[in-house]
Length: 310
Image (cartoon, rainbow, N blue to C red):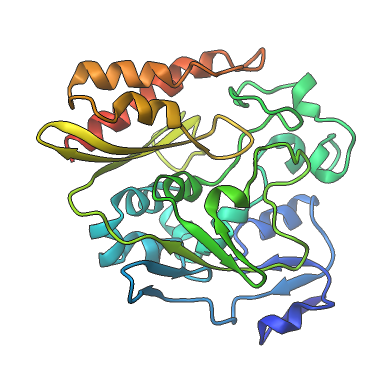
């Protein structure tokens, strides 16, 4: 059964999975993981990229990822977000997938995606991957699910201190995911709560930015580790920094310890290398994911180098 919403209020009493672009939901239906009713929100007026009077920028949740990546304001003022949006998936997916949906997608773990394998996010009591195959799992383990969060866009929004607006509230992007202790969930929205907008703070002039993902083939692959970076450098000194990483934990992470190792320091190769090494300080990898720690360090270092040369 399909219910197409004409107004946000129509969500009250509706049952089923919410669909916007549908690029993830259709895959899950085809795999037999999801079934039942669909609540379609693609006609709701959650579009547009608008600069507000206070200099902040609102991005509607139904805007496509491609629209975000190609928008002149995002490219000029929020380079890490633009580069992340243009670097994920394939052009076909970016043309169809919604910006809001990219923040709320389900885990890409093969145990979740197989209808007959155990997974806490399907209601099972244990994570099959934790005892089974988890070689591309988490290296900052928060328990429960052994697989990392899937949202590339979230890593970039974290470094900009973005917030999200829903039909019920407004909150920092980090609060959308919490601390990772909700092991049966990919985000913390309530049932039938709809994400409507993402709010970016006013542009900081002169920032250097980069996005990079380490993957196992040339393109169109889920990242082993990915990193978003923004740096503000004045007189060769790093005045501010934002470091977001994905593919390493059950939630997208902002690495405050790496930022602290950069801020106030000279923008030199040695400082970048030392800061990248700091990223592993709190790592607690699973038995099969120890190899990813060095990948993370090198991914962060490469992204910092890219930003420095932006």
